[in-house]
Length: 170
Image (cartoon, rainbow, N blue to C red; front, side, top):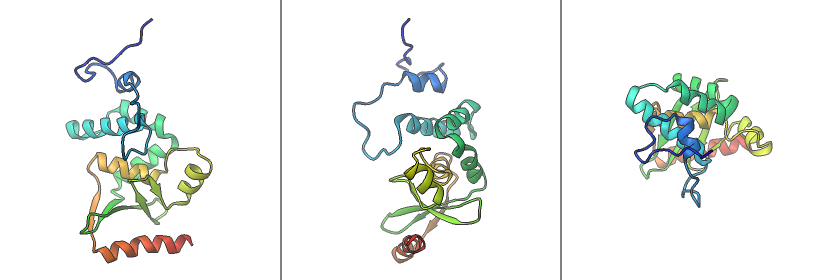
């Protein structure tokens, strides 16, 4: 029995999971990539699907739940509630703020997939039970679906946002 490979024309006719399974893993990780290749590909598929049909098909939602586990549904809820804000300074420095279900505001950094919430520190960093928390997954999904709020702030304001998080932790 041979392994099915995606056709050269981009895998049309195969399901997302078949296309993901058929992809060869690159010899070295992409620069700047912090998520496993399958998670990156799933987020790209979600972006493409949303651009084409303005919704995420069930097979991609199942993939999301399979890869990200219990964080998937709460992250989608945060996206639906438009809880993600992209905060940008004039120099281009970017952070994301996510209003959590508890009403607390968490700062997320997509460049290194880090969140200031306790669940990230415990479930992701200490126990390695999940790839990321619902807040940072909501950031990735909001970006893929064009659902981020936008907020432009001064360099000083962004610094204050980042320092406020640091003071709360310490």
